Image (tube, rainbow, N blue to C red; front, side, top):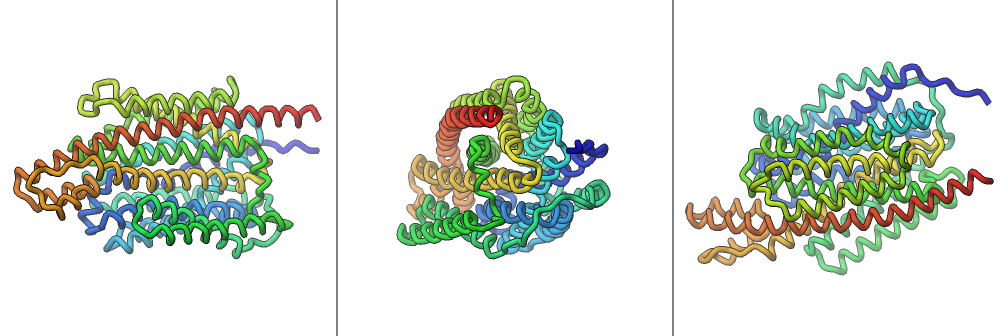
Length: 508
């Protein structure tokens, strides 16, 4: 068998696809610091704001696997260029949205473009870098862009909001796409190996409808805003669609989603790491953004600057993870990174953010570094367990874990935050029951209620809201620490099984 020579342009290809990936990941977090501004500018309700933030990762979670398998059939280059075009157009439309419903619709279009881009990026990296050491470094650099982009989102969003209107957080994607799309057009090979067979759009719709139904049922059940019977009915409907999709995959000669991928313990471990770590990180970032602005009275830009330690440390995590994994083994690196993340979150839960000193920046930097290493380790585990021909399919699975984790993290943390806040909020004396009920919904509602009152009574309501949110913040970070600590133990055993399986294959 002839050995394929490495692509001489492989590092330029990596640079191009990383730039293509950057706006997609920025859009996951750039809105976190924009919540107060969006609420006032568009007159959006708390439910509309949640959907503006959440519809993007939740819809992408349902689209990534179908788009990943379609990319394997028509080629990563064609799919990537189409996704870049859609994403650029959707960004311009979102910037000009006149109201909250229109912004939600444009976020749906953004999710469609992003779901085409993400699996192609990983698939192209897998096919471009055959050498394991180079692939580990390439995935490490890709992980740096992902982690740093997500961490930089609040900073970039805050800086834009300090000088421009809220639409600038979307409009910034347009010039990036105008540069990246031509670069990918010239650099990516026009001929590439593709999978045979047709793309079953019916199966894709089954998967999308099933995932969205299940996630919506989880959101509705956690919020307790719908009768339990309705929630269970939607959940059962979604589960039935997913079961039908799985049955069709097992019987198909050329399935859309190769369920045999889940036979690899490394892929299972990587997926669990991606879902739980991304969910916890998204929830923590959203909580911190609100804590900094509502409780500590920081501007969006100041809130973004406060999070710089996470961004700077996350930028180092990707390359460090590739080097550490090759030196000490994937299992040790993955488990220790999750354990350190859990310890840092537990410390942050009981730290006074009013007097950050050097302790809080140090803890935030440690969290960014540890989570970045852990998420890059999950990429190495997943992409190293498959052959190149299944790179986009495996990449879509991994990206689904990121998006599903992010969407569920925002949803569950948001609902959890509202429940804890409502229980810990103590209304000041003399506040009417109606206004007290509204103020107890969220700290944002506390500020809205305060605007309707006299200066003294309004200040009392805001003080009560700040006190309740500080307690809420501690409970949320403690919960995230417990989740990631449990994840570290689970990954320890899964990757041990993966090592034994790999060893058995080598001796056959």
